[in-house]
Image (cartoon, rainbow, N blue to C red; front, top):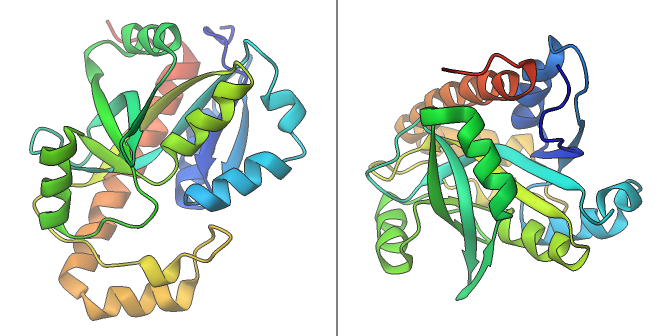
Length: 233
């Protein structure tokens, strides 16, 4: 089956999320988009996009970029494993919309499996359940990640259509470990501080690992669904 939309490039955070998307595409025959691993966080992502050797291909007007990965829930409505499609991203009072046509096509293709949501982009990790609920209520946002707004702002300049499809990996009822110290300035993860943060909060760490594994499995499945042509009825 041809790449139905078509999507030119998938951008997905490096590490486990990138691997899950690649696994989802591994059995797909026919046309599949290029998949690029991006760094975690707003500043590292902007630096990557500005310096990327594929920049020329990414910034072709009318091309379509799909951002995939996992996200945190800011609302009781969205649980671990739920698939969400962003309508927009807010950051420090500013709001940018994802491409409406592209998003609507993805939504109709994935049928009832996917919820349309409003997202918050954060320049730091939101690990506390209390803060998540507070942000969700005060900003009327459903989910949070660390890259969305930056990507929309960057691609808007080049007239590139962007859609964002993510899977919830942690809910707003429980804390997850504060992994701030484990994220390097280049957006990569540092394994030693990561391990230490996990050890300091073993219950929260167990919950995060379990939630992430669930979300990554769903991310793999939805990637396969999008590009294999096994459209749900």
